[in-house]
Length: 595
Image (tube, rainbow, N blue to C red; front, side, top):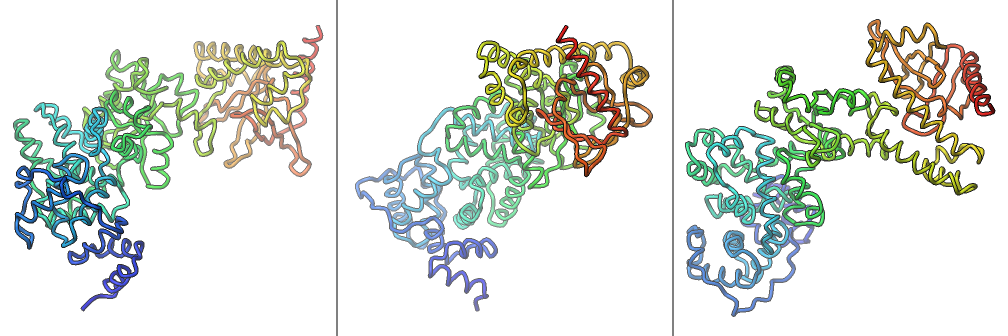
């Protein structure tokens, strides 16, 4: 007696409703007696391939693959196999592995040939054309994923000097079918591949098979013993366990890695442009900032971020929540990393993903963050990856997209902003010195809508830009002086004794109480935490040119201008006093210009 779901699947097959067939069989699995109808439907096979009866190959080498489970005799099976492989392009051994299970489906040879061709093109395009860079990439990504989830296995493979490259490439090209013990088992794996939404599932099946053998492989005394262990067959009873583990592995692997794998196997332009050079020169998995935060938001990844830049760079802006350990000090002061490793020991038992970043990434000779990652992996931490393009790549998202904030960002100290600022100011000065009335049009294009809404006198363009550059340079000098002479909190306490200041509140998504200090050159925003003053941000007064007030919100001033510090809205304790302060500084500056 059939169940309602089985009846639904039967009817869906008859009317060729692919969606219903796929969704229902994901729940129930594909029944053995339905494969000959479901496979062509799932793969969109309408007519069998026209076979050239003269194109056949020798089949003696395929005899070891044979499992006596077919109803027809061995001779007939080998004839069909020889005909199928002869009419298809690619690695003969891989084609045979895909074709042999399908020969038990009681289909016409031309239909099976079409199925094999479709499966090969869908899952293993590498089979069509062997490429050294693709082969190397497959093996590199294999090692990176194993290391990501089980670093002790890679350590073992290195110790016994085992070379698994050919084994890995062969299994990927053959959809891991040689690892399956029986023909029915091979068909069960093909079922899972056709029903999965992940086109790279067979790659993760291979990795899962190896990780599940971890206890055995770690005891292997030699390279030969390791190879013998991973060549052990998967029985029909174990297939569900291995595939289930593979699916869990996919969901717990950063999407960036799976994208790199797909780019590699398809030998895409992206792989040729940058993926190959990136993955083959690093020693850990590489993740993009956009992808890893998408993993956090949509897949629930727990992230632990390590900023490997120096302390000065870290304090001038970092990814929210990042912990700092200076990679450049590891060799001279190894106790720093040793203490750091002890502090985060608890992460070993968690499912936290550790992401390390520098200013750029490992391809930059100046970067030393590889040292941090080597220490982490050597000490047994899993799920360790490197952020592609480092903080520079993240800062680009901060500049251009929403949802990528920078913590404690300092416009005047941030190395990336300073580089962008110097380049931008120099370009603007060069452009405005000689073009007269076109100067402000250039400024509009350079700074965008924030500047486009401002009103600036033509004759002031170059002077204003130079003023900003001079003020910023002076502020940087003063900040360095402060850092060298006294504690930050003491400095601001002394500053408030001589300079204009008052309490206020930053108005935004999350209101924040502040103290506003006004000097001759800048507006400084600080807050008080546990009795100590901490810097929030500093803004040169030359940037505070356009302000707005509304009667509906007395005491509230909005400063309009160029991001990231502006626009900014503050509610002042005494707004009149603050406006008088701004006016006095503006008058002094005008007098200075007149003189």
